[in-house]
Length: 340
Image 1: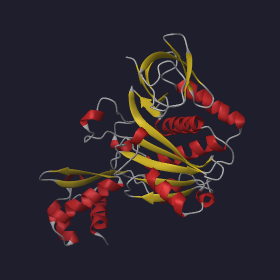
Image 2: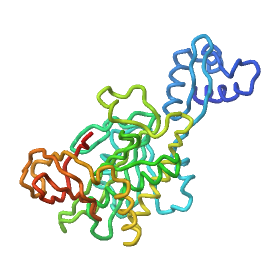
Image 3: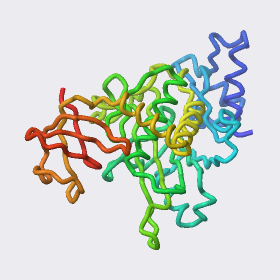
Image 4: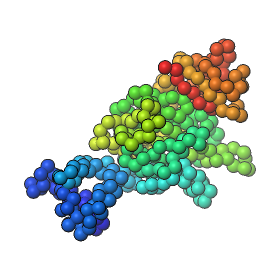
């Protein structure tokens, strides 16, 4: 057995062993049982924590097994027994699940990859919109990318909206937490971002249309004490207790909800967009729009930031706004910020 497996077994047994006060096992005892150094024991504990095991460490007492939030390919699939058409590729750590999905689509048959989901416990180069880095630490969140091969045209805005609704539904079903949506791709809870979506398309040179869609999702589940200082005011989490993480259940639920909308008939898609609108934190509010250089929006402001009021979210995920001159503008891209 590997050192981490022995450590885990001993710590679990110690919870029911009267010889160990409060379930704690000293590092010295663990080292002797594993025939390794105490440094190796610490490394094993660190590896177990990265896997989702909560292990407490107290000076002069040792280590104690608290609970587990195991997230593996098998544990995710166990929560979706009816989804026989979904394939999961699992990574303990990866640069970016979206980047890997692109690599796979270049190497393998896209039709075989349809409904493949790449799940990672950690990303070293997670991707956000406009080339930004998406902070993706181990243990506190879950990160996955869905590969979808559309059988007919899907507006990019709708795809992102479908993913947003799917995430909100899954978060509520697993945790009972109601989330809002900030156009285009942020999931909001208590005024802070708890999940982000990055939708990317791969075009066919022959047809000029999008023939492969990648939907990347990152969810912050529990608090992260090492959150970069520049994110502390804007980034939150779904629940406050480690024991409530349930990463496998959440991941499975999100996959099923998103695919259900993408595969649904026109009526089901319309219902999803109604829900998107009802969850919007922007409709009726004053916002600042930061257009993208070279964007397709036709407005008198050009590429300068401007203030406007949000009127609606259209069925294709486009944001309808009215500027200070009374002009109605349809935003398909760009950045927006909500006025306080």
